[in-house]
Image 1: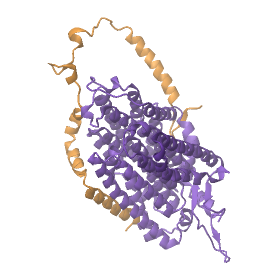
Image 2: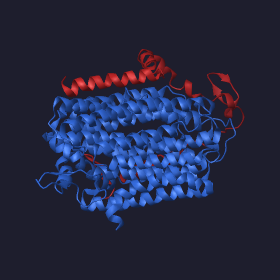
Image 3: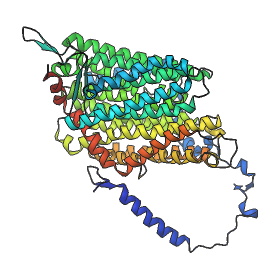
Image 4: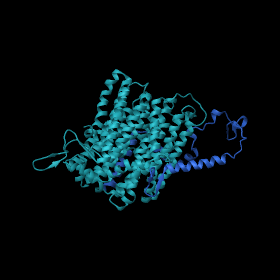
Length: 111
Length: 515
């Protein structure tokens, strides 16, 4: 059937996947429609709330540098040498290039 | 008549148009833009014609200025001495990508560089870069490969440093030029070694004579390092974020294909030039390790970036890793029963990923370009709530991000799924790393979406010009279509490319059979 890809271990069809997604969405909507309709976003309920502090809407946006802070902080021991290796110095770029060349020559060439 | 000369026309038309562009610029800017887009549109059609020809009749051999590929001496000695273009399934796949991306890059450029000066030079270099890539993909000669590699390098560096009012562009162009020049010198040195030993530059002739001597091994090392560097493999990737981030967005789009053209060169060298003569297991593992390093280091470095295009550029490095991984597995299993069992599938996944990557990564660079164009900002920390004003770009970004992260039903999922499954049979740990990298890729694009598109509206934003929306729309349609019908792409385009790579003898016979 068109749209069915042989992956070597099984089959994949995006069309069937979309069909499944549509059915699932209908079920979700059906359950959702039973939910209460009394929540109002006006007044205090509509105000932004961040860690117990009341803030104006414009200040609530989490900046890109703060996203995944916990992840990068935890992996500091991995990131410190990695960032240190990316010096932005073209001499280092060339050095890495030469190092790889040497390793490839040793491994591929059996030197 | 045209059919007989397609490869030469595909290289020649953008090459000649490049030199005509400054002259047409003297008449009118609009006319120049129409001319460039028209030329690349015609080239796209010619590539389509050539693709039909190659898929129907097999390898297309074109000899410049003669009918025969070589010269026969009275003694009976025969040798291909002419400039030969050889187009097989792999070459045409790359040409399809190049023609689509260059055409869309020119359309996008119309509005993107409209207010800039020096557009005659910009379009000249864009056409030269395109012609150089076609040359790399079609040439059947190692020295000409080097020449076209240099053409692309010079044009690419000129375009990366196109705007020198920001100092970073000039610095990025300089760094890229240093690396490109060194890489090209390595390639030239390798070509010299091969020529010195075998008195030939033709790839098919060299492939038929190669002995895998110590000098051949040195040449192989030089070629792997030089081409893997230009493809952006870790740890030789550091020029990539500099170059991609500083180049104008449509050029970043074309640079993606430029790095893939180098990847094509690497695959051509490994499979067609050396083939089973090398220790496929060892060299295959070298490629696999370069791939895994690229995947992991690329994505983890992307995670800590706050500049939009730099972040996407590190993501691009990561995607190169997938291509190296699958093809590395294919090479490691070459001439073993495992090739049929999962090696070919791994290569299919990787080659399919090349075409997918060009489309979705190109799309992401164009959305980044649209953001920079409309807001004037490059730093994600300064952005917020762009989805309020840039609705089209938001949708295109979601499509591109979903595809690069390997979410169904987009095209990236289909190629990554093939890679995961086939690589798992080779080494399960590699497959696990590939899946982990995909999850991290999703995380980095969620970061962009959250910080740039979501949140309160904090700035005034210009509207995206129509030409930019058109280019992004076409790429989005391709991303979705390839995702919905991956089987068609794999059967019609990818499988012939994989067969072309693994059947070294067919490539050799196409030239030497007609000498």
